[in-house]
Length: 104
Image (cartoon, rainbow, N blue to C red; front, top):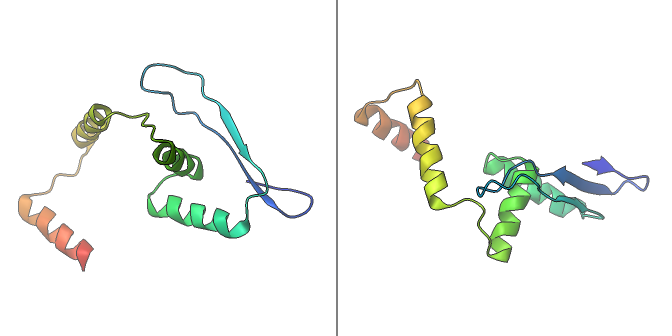
């Protein structure tokens, strides 16, 4: 984020995520004169989804424009890889208790 001379916030980000097809060039996007309340909502939503503001903006644009850069296969493949990399192993009972605790 950059604050201009007039005190208005501008969100400037450069996407570094490569498209799954192997393309490495990504465009840059600059948003000027973004209202403060909209920026705060975007920041809160990004935090709630555990994403950067740039990643959250990309997801919002993908949904609004009907685009999907990541296939379901890519998501499942990444989840399986992350599960394999995890050093935390929970029993079914421990997992059920964690879920119950998280919902309370």
